[in-house]
Amino acid sequence: MDHSAVIAKASTLRPIIKKRLKRGVPRSWREYQKQYPVRRIALQHNDPTAFDFIDTQERFNRERGFRGENHYLEYSNEMVIEFSKCLNSPLYFIENYCHITTANGLQLINLRDFQADAIETIHNNNKVLGLTSRQASKTTIVACYLAWCLCFREHYTMAILSHTIQGSSEILNRVYQIMANLPDFLSPCIVSKSRERIVTGSGVSLEAFASTGSSLRGQSLSLCYLDEASHLGVDLAKFYPEVIAPACSFRNSKVLLTTTPQGRDYFHALWKGSKKLLGVGGNGFSRFTCQWYDIPENLFDYSDPDNPVFDNGKTFKAIKLASSTLSQFEIEYECSFATVANALIAVEAIRRLRVSEPWIDDDCKEIKIFRDPVANARYVIGVDLGTQTGKDYSVAVVYAVDSNEIVATMRDNTSTLDEISMMIGNLGYLYNNAYLIIEVGDKWNISQTVINCLSEYFEELRYYRTRVNANRTQIGLAQSRHTKAHGYSLLKESLEGKCPVAVNDQLLVDELSTFVEIKKRLSLSTAPVFGAAEGYHDDLVMGLMLILLSLSDETFKQEIAFADWSDIHEEQEIIDPVFSTWGCF
Image (cartoon, rainbow, N blue to C red; front, side, top):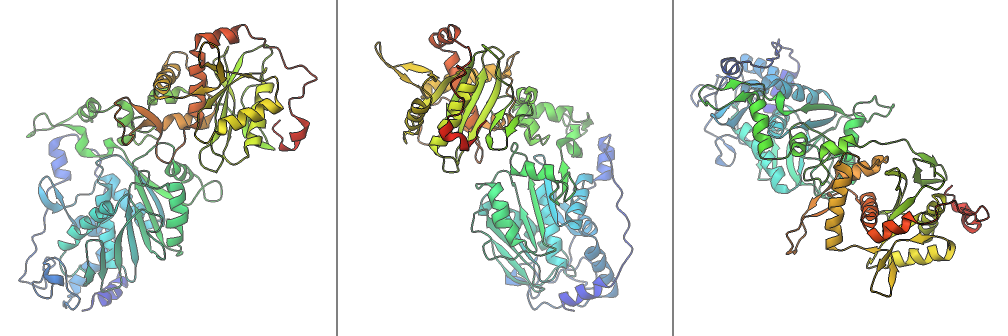
């Protein structure tokens, strides 16, 4: 009987399938072995009416585990009923027929409770997010579901995407292993099969792709699986809406994204949106999650391999912490979005940082005011300038010296340099003629352009100056490898100490959580270099670093201690009338 004909016949049946019961947490090794026994199906070649029969004739490309395009099999009524059970329940199919390789060799998969929940979520929803810890076998359960689709769908196009084509091909190989160990009455006939693509006789295809901008161009997919969505070589915030969403435009197309977290990225935004109702801030995604303590094997102490002892995961956690940091453990095993691996600032310090609701003028949303200026208070402003081409940002961070807090921020990457200069100058005038600490020495000479604008429109502004020699100083602070190393130390000390800087701005907290050690190519220096993780920004962090570096300068500290901090004279307007239409205040 043709495989498509079997699908059509089995679809009309509704056999009774025993409901899967949750197994819970095994409290002893004997209970664990009872709940998760080693099971195998020994496939045989003699009795074609048995459920474990696999033929030796008409194999695809002479591969033992795959039926050829012209392979014929006579289905008994019992086979059709069993086929219908598998068609109607992916859980039944996976637990009774899918083999995987484990420490015990090839065996039938014993789904953990969280894996069964994940399969149900994937099967019953079109848009699914999976947030899992390391070693949770998420790609294995997805491979099982993809194998189910190959066996029981018709005219169904699927794609696997990963950071590289090798990663996608590895997942496809897991699907091949499952398919190769199925009995013939469940296996589809194979039309074509390669390292990166498989097509069945019922019109189902599964192909592996790398996550590039052109990978799915022209594709119309019924299912798209994106593995490690937070660890791609492209920006997920652009890749999902520009590549995946158009390819999955069918009304019933499935989209599945799984990952371990990588800070507050686009996946984090999708995850937060999945908590809310569609139309009330929600995005229509369903979700499943797994942390390390959801995996029964992690709850035992294996000091005696023959008789492991249940300790509720204490030994597992201790072993992992011994070879990594607490922040890495929380990211990789507890699915924390608080920070990313190798961040400069510890996750505990990030969590202690407090944010405030800013006041924002509708006419100038680039500026956030957290605290109004206080008479005679001392303020400095760290200014890090960008190219204003829609990529990196120009920022100004206003810091209250006396209260150790950030009272205002400006962040913009599209305005002209004249407009940026006006916003910076107005902030300086507003906050008691604050000192401007401007990073200089950029190769595009942007800083000098902004300084010239400021000097033209704001005559009273004060600047941090660097001594060039005994007779000359220059406006601004030029960063070098040595000043940045000092800045890293100052950032860590000021944010992890007993009296951390009150940062107030959520965007700055987000940037600090993704400010990580990065690898510089062709560098002979062994000193660590920190910057924004791939796909993130660090402009506000650099603005804060400029402030901390300037305040570590004893000469500058004396200058601001004896400076006049009274308000700008009332006759001097905060906003230059010429530029009043640019509206900052």
